[in-house]
Length: 283
Image (cartoon, rainbow, N blue to C red; front, side):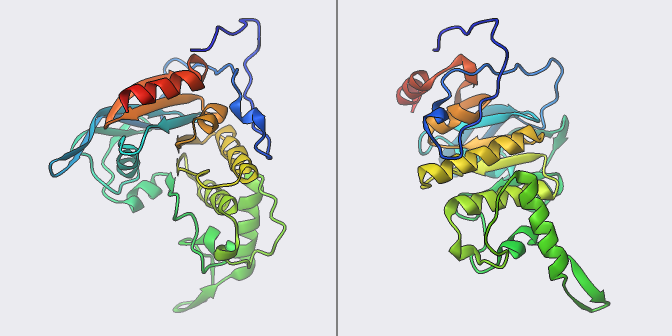
């Protein structure tokens, strides 16, 4: 556990540099407590899930709040992917309750989750490689022009929507918007997916290993954009194996082990050594 912080020190929200430098560790940050009576954007209440003889989740509870990043940590097989798919409407839980903005919900499929403002960016499915940057951002919500059955893509409006989405997230896009997804980097793909989700009105952003396999500089830029999403009021659930990245941006941390919650922490209540030790003991 980290040493007590100076009580006279004002709360700060550190941001990692875009270069992904040593600031990512952000070993000392004061995290603002959750206001009394605040209603979580998403709450999982005693969620359980099994697949045949395999138990994936047992009595798992967590809360994600607007303007906060919840990091979900755990070793392989801890149940992170199953939990995220339940929150995204891919799987129904076998037991427990999901609440969205304080109301009990049943998410029958991912489309229902998206309609409620739940946007999930999976690690390998951030963009369609054969579509342009613009088409990736407006995918499923393409502006059209024409009459009756004779409608086609309004490319000028679509490009304007794409530029607005990127600008909202603070992404500096210096190449053409007609660049194909296959030609852009992993970090740029994640940034595009986050921009797309926010532009179309998400209130809960679920990110599955967004910095996995990225170079240090690219990872730093993605973390910058995650912080921007938080600062614009998004509730963010960040799934990651990288404890340093989690500690650099998270406000709250939940650790899963063998399908169960091993611990809930506010960021300034723990540190890298304590998290590493916990996962090693319970994983």
